[in-house]
Image 1: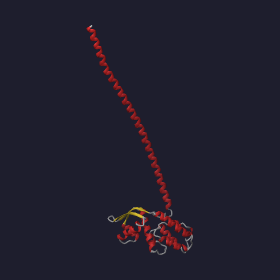
Image 2 (image 1 turned 90 degrees about the horizontal axis):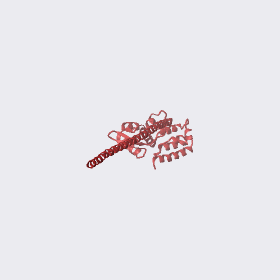
Image 3 (image 1 turned 45 degrees about the vertical axis):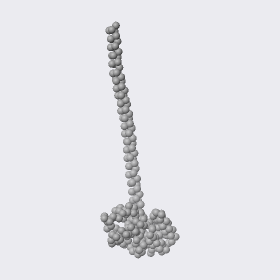
Length: 247
């Protein structure tokens, strides 16, 4: 079962749970969801009306916690102004995994020094173990560890939840891409049309050349025939002249 299908099943499970609860009863669901080892998307849970109703209540910190896991990173957690619930070890691991996904989305070559700083890792061995065991083995990223260049070359990374307003930017990017594609298609069609025109012109030119060659051949054949005929007539005339003389 691929990671996308697993995500869909886990999301459906937690959305159903959250939809059936309200208030403080949601805190356990949020902690469980953000601790789940195979769940890396939270926007659907965030959109549940009962979860949004936590805003402004005594449990609003759990809504902030869920938003952090949907869009934030480990550095965001460390620098966040408002107090959040203390993370359990599974949540800390999950947030660091999500941090790798965010970094992989911004660059396909991640220096070890940057990763160690963002993940609070003190040495290369610990970093590589984390990338192998907690990221690549889990299936959220694929890539190559380059010890000589001290970097992680990303080949694939699972996507994260879109930030508020990010959808508009993506739609604009897609619109620009479609416009560029349309322009490229028009350019290709014009080149094909030009190539067809040139091909037709070449065909006509080739036909004209062939017709001229045929005319030249016919002309040469006629001249050759005339040249051969003249000596024959001359020889016959000479024979008749000789006979006349003898008589």
